[in-house]
Image (cartoon, rainbow, N blue to C red; front, side, top):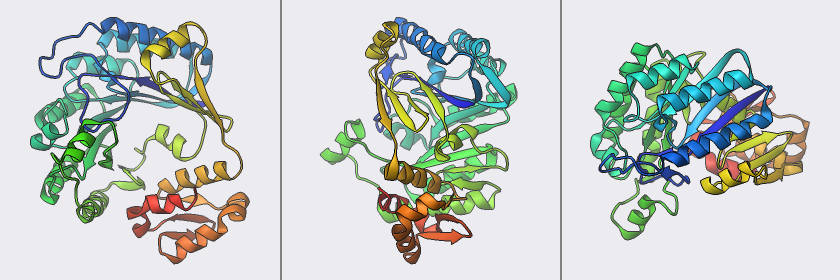
Length: 373
């Protein structure tokens, strides 16, 4: 049984912080269609051809991510779901997630998602502050998000995740508090929150280098994360992974496959699979991906994870979860030294045979992970 990830690398507009290789299909200013509609059709055809390699497999979860999957038409989405049901076996109570951006949803599209079997919606909000949304290049307003959220509820979605980003340039603690309180009030089942990472090659990186924007102060960034943990847990959300909070029984089944180092399939340009201890990465360029799939020569980068590297990856992924990871004989043999040192520093704690990040360790997680690399 596998989890399946399908990558849809198309967007209406490139966000200023985005470092992913995506194709913009619409003009961000005019909203007019570009001449790239044929590219979407070619890409979806190639995706189905790649999916055909795994025909008949049992799936425990499906996650359609991007990019912006809800940029696809209702017909294209319905056709994709039909392909899944016709070619794969579904585990009972399969989790099917689709990422969505406000500004790309309407009643018909939400109905198509629901009728296609989607039972988990992940909406990329990032902030409810329109000033900040504009500053980071988002295409929507806070009101559009709320309209889409309530429309999804009306259609029948009872498992919705909301993505948020904190430590944005110019974001004050009071801005972050307002967004979190408003989101808590509408009670999404799941909330993911991430500290802004400014990657080389993005517009935001160029703005940072030129002095047009300034990074958020590290102390304020830590305060924002601590405040989020406090207010979300006080309001019934379980902090089950570094960046993820959920009501009981609403944690992401698909994402837990990654953190638990289990097998999964990745289909589409740049998608990653993990099978039998080997990580396989598809070619990232959309045109090359289509060409390779159509010539039955899909280019993959293969990396067999063995020995110390495999154990280190298992530890790093496992420590992302709040329950931590069991210290088996392999871990004990290879990493007893770093583990004991991190416990002495107050970054890890031991609970019977498990180790996990302390509260201090959560704030300094990257420093902990480096010790195992």
